[in-house]
Structures are given as C-alpha cells and as structure tokens.
Length: 149
Image (cartoon, rainbow, N blue to C red; front, side, top):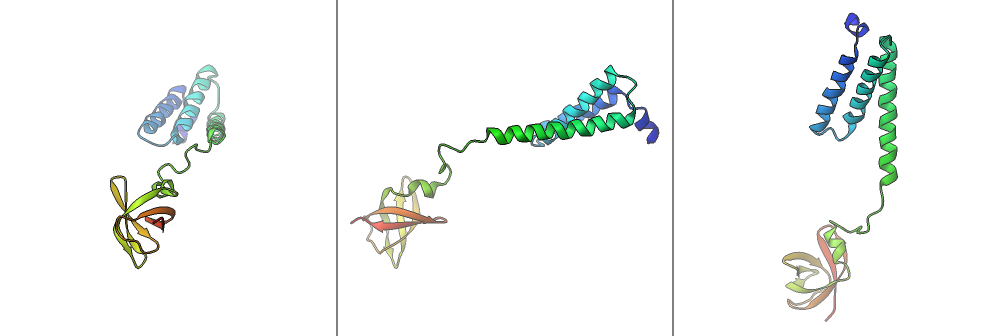
C-alpha cells in the first residue's frame, strides 16, 4: 500500500476527483463537489510539477478540501435572505385575520369551518352552522376563532 501511495501520479488524483464528482451527481448535497475539485486540482498540480512528493500531495489535497469547503460554506451563508413571504407553507398562519363560515356547528368549543375547498377543525365560542367567524390563532392543525355574528 505504501508503494502505491509513494507512486501516486496525476492520473490517480484526476480519477479520484472524477469519482467524487460522479458520486456528487447522485445526491451528496454539495459535500463531495469541493473534495472532488480539490483532488482534480492536486492532479493538475502533480502534472505541472512532477516531482511533488506524496506527503505534499496529501497536504495539498487536505488543505484545498478544507479551503474550498469553507469558501462555499461562507458564500452560502452570505446569500441567505429572509423570505418576503414568511408564512409560505404555513397554511394556518396565512388564515389568521380572515373570515370564514362555520361548516359544522361549534359546540363545547369545537367544530369545523369551511376554508376554500377544505374543512378545518375550529376551536372557540359556540356558534351555529352558517355563522361567520374570524381566525385569531392556531394550535397545530386547529384554528382558533372568534364569532362575528
């Protein structure tokens, strides 16, 4: 094994880089991209400077892997912006303040209200079917309502 490591050529580094990039295509989430590029860079450097010892090659590979990963991590953190629609995919939060009709009478504090083409469980003061209510909050999948009638 030591003989193989001591005789590493640029082809070995390029092959490692290619394999890592192929694995990245199958869904590694960006982690192997930077390590694969570091391996390919070491392969190019080994081609340009044929006398590089295996120790220097591994040192360069480790250093370039860490530097490229840190670079990408910092870049990703700098481009994250708050959403202009913070309640997107939080359907119950989007409904707060809107008025709906009671679908199934609210009895003993629980009932159902019609929201678009669906029905939500509602919690609030008793109200007959057909009454208008306003959503004032949310507890999980249950909407908290107040009577308007």
